[in-house]
Amino acid sequence: MNDLFATVADETAQKARPLADRLRPQSLSEVCGQDHLTGEDGILTRMIATGSLGSMIFWGPPGTGKTTVARLLAGETDLAFEQISAIFSGVADLKKVFEAARARRMSGKQTLLFVDEIHRFNRAQQDSFLPVMEDGTVILVGATTENPSFELNAALLSRARVLTFKPLDEHSLMQLLNRAEETEGRALPLDEPARQSLLRMSDGDGRAALTLAEEVWRAAREGETFGADGLQTVVQRRAPVYDKGQDGHYNLISALHKAVRGSDPDAALYYLCRMFDAGEDPLYLGRRLVRMASEDIGLADPQALVITNAAKDAYDYLGSPEGELALAQACVYLATAPKSNAVYTAFKQASRAARDNGSLLPPKHILNAPTKLMKGEGYGEGYQYDHDAPEAFSGQDYFPEKMGRMKFYDPPERGFERELRKRLDYWAKLRAERRGDGG
Image 1 (tube, rainbow, N blue to C red):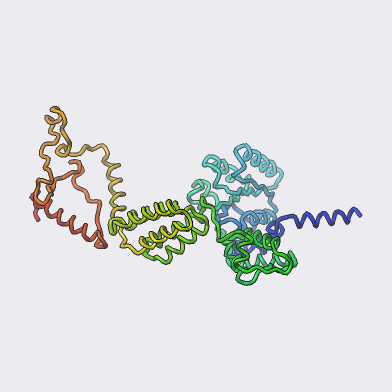
Image 2: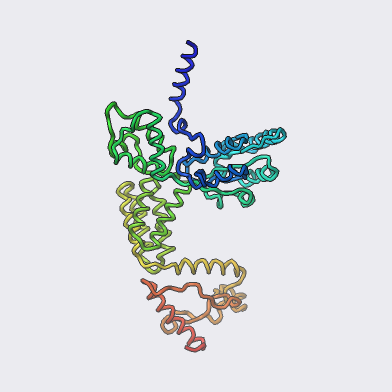
């Protein structure tokens, strides 16, 4: 009788575990979507075959198997497995883990230390791993959703190999759903369009796919099958959602910016709508569009900045969803406008010149002389009032004397800047004539 109760209790506990946990792979060959790492010719498969593991950084989006693979590596190489999270751990926790690893090493057992969200550790905490990695106390496997090049110390990266985990493709996600149906002993109550919609909602995240599948099973009445609209109602999710502080956010805004710069309004609208659908703050997008107007269009179309500012204000006034159309209008305007980074380039060059020559005084002839002493020192002497000169142009030099004239702004022969170039060329000719340099 006790055995029967124990069996029932075990089955109940098993069913209470989330589906994603119950379907966790038990060997590397069961890992979906990472064949370049865990397949027959995968990097990790080869490492295990040679019996030589080194420290590694697993970089990839959530739900791609980073934690699972680390645990499996320890099991297949007979290493002690320790797991900590940088979110919940501090220096004291690290010291305890290192001490335990040293004790194991004394008894001949090496430790695989898995550090989730390793990018959350500050620079000093990251440096604390270096000694225990170098002397072999631990084999470090860090997991991060952030670009390691930006978030991890160079010293740490030089001692660890970065392995990239890919978002799960449609085939891999379908494999997971098939496994889930086998485990549950029932089919998902979805028609084919709804099944495809669920895959898109998962956004390459295996854990998300299985969680969504669980939600569907919980919601479905006996004999009920959901279509795509019904699925959205049940799971209350419109589209892939990314963490606004993570790489997904930066990848999409980068794609939007490059599509605008590349004069592709269709691609630009697509990425803009993806970010709307993922819950991005539309005012953030408005600010980014304003930046694009200055950086990539500039004076080739001076109206670009006016229109994007107006669109941002319109959204602020209307809110969602009505105001999103104003941002879409600005996005298309920017993508179809003539492009120029001449002001952007000139600004960077002028900033560099200002840093390099920040101690130089402007020439005395353009400085005001409000006191007799300053007049005596030559302040304002020789200044020519441009409005009194022919064509309102004196041709004087305004740079500090030790710098000489410098050229930063070089407008291209595009859009409104074609007219600006004509003006600048004309003024350059007048300047040369009035200074006696030829012309």
